[in-house]
Image (cartoon, rainbow, N blue to C red; front, side, top):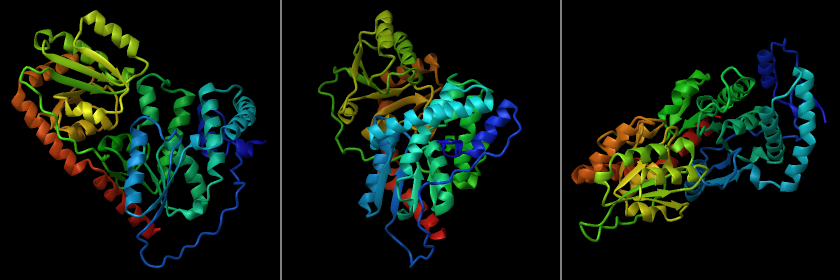
Length: 434
């Protein structure tokens, strides 16, 4: 195996050379082992039914917003007669994946060591994953698709290079700003080779994309800083197919008021700030239950915090598959997240007709209009969260009004039909221009 196949990204090599202070010398370009068919550029009228490839570097299906997005988009497109294939690394043969990983790792290590004198573990491991995924995607006949839709920057890079031959409309939907978020939470260091590596991949994904579809306007500024043009970005807010359950009325006026938080139990979801706020409201919480739905690495820490603060009203329910039922019994939904894009749980809560409290981060303010469809507080601000909770706990009229407004907004703007309709029109426009 040689460098031509192992590291077929000359722009990444050039960026790493720059980081290490090397004078960039020519790097062999990738030569596909597959011989693509010649592209037929003729179109016979307007094609109403498209063949679409949706591809992601992450596992599918999986728990989380990305998986739900792909499921909802593909379901909606198929219901309109379009053909949709979904590709992800976990769909390929584990034995072949293992063999490829084992064969490429020493070659990558040698490449980095000879060129730079050492290698970075995170970049080595990541490049190995990309290499394996790329070899799998090489087996896919891209010629048969009218539209390619990458759901992450890594897939956009791979399909982008392949697409230099096929010239298909290539859409790119980032579900988070990869480098920015890892710098923000000190997963990677400012000025590090890892920042240089991932930022270059992010910039190139933008260059390769025919058009970028984002989940909220909050993506625009960071994408523009990476080189995107505002005119090449379209915001399409995520829509879901929410069950038409009737909200369950409380049996009596003395029934407990229910506060629910649906989120992975991770450090970025801010459960600790919710618990701090609840600890300041004990005289208002004697007839309240707080349901924590979800599981994750912070569970033991949060259970200890609950005990230390004496929050007997808090119940950990773990992962549940009946979230719509729980939301139908919920009076106030709280997501105290300190880092998010466009949380599906808020969209579900709005569809359910629940008053929402969340934070000013990501695309959340595009869902929640403060004091109209919910209440927005600053991320990590337990004092603001305390005031918001107190207001909705003690003000049933405001709670009901926000619940109604949230449901109206969701039914108008946050449905699969709305999302798929906008994306389908983009697909067709670019297919016709192509």
